Image (cartoon, rainbow, N blue to C red; front, side, top):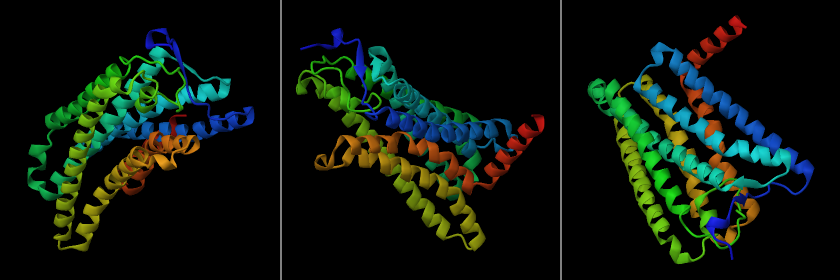
Amino acid sequence: MSNSSSISHFLLLALADTRQLQLLHFCLLLAISLPALLGNGLIISAVACGHHLHTPMFFFLLNLALTDLGSICTTVPKAMHNSLWDTRTISYTGCAAQLFFFLFFLSAEFCLLTIMCYDRYVSICKPLHYGTLLGSRACAHMAAAAWTSGFFNALMHTAQTFSLPLCHGNALGQFFCEIPQILKLSCLDSSSIREVGLIAVSACLAIGCFVFIVFSYVQIFRAVLRIPSEQGRHKAFSTCLPHLAVISLFLSTGMFVQLKPPSISSPSLDLALSVLYSLVPPALNPLIYSLRNQELKAALWRLMTAWFKEH
């Protein structure tokens, strides 16, 4: 029986057994990650360079794109490296770092989505107070709170998870390091009570954010339906639908992974679901926002046109 002090590395889940399938998985990961990196990078550049986009909505969108970039860069490069070089290893410290940053960006993204919901609520339900409630200083404070809460949430979970003694080998049933897989390696079930407590606290906070989002959108839809003109209702809905679609994608994939019955669990299904909730939202978020937002599409077009002219 080994313990955590004797473990120098972990073995991640192999994506495939044959060399051909390993290279195929490498290409698939590359095909998912490149559009995600390009799309989020373009959004960050467009918002940073476009002075007319320096509004609370686009400021929070820039922060959201940063979390998407971070989550992609945390899990995908190691998985691509392992597929390309036919290896499964990740160092003990590398696994801890990967877990920390994945939780950090995931937690910060959920906080930012909640804040963006508040932005839409104030914009539609309290438009006369928009400048007061969402001034530049207030936006900076809310963004800082989202990043800070994500940092401390990730720090607590990572510190607690890697303080557990590990006695069941070092093989993880996932292509990246995550808490449930590491808990399976712990010596005793009782040793994870504190970690379960932290997960319960995080779940309560997540449920609180979810209730706030639902309540806000109920108020938003009630306010939109009271708008007399059809054009006004359409404009209001067009600013909310991308955010609502991103929230739905984020929550539906994550909740399905966490709440699926153990009876339907299998290694191949778990792998597919992990790709679904860790890679698909960061790749689709830029597309969802750019398709529905005319200002953002115009800014992206100007940015790409200027780049092509220079080169």
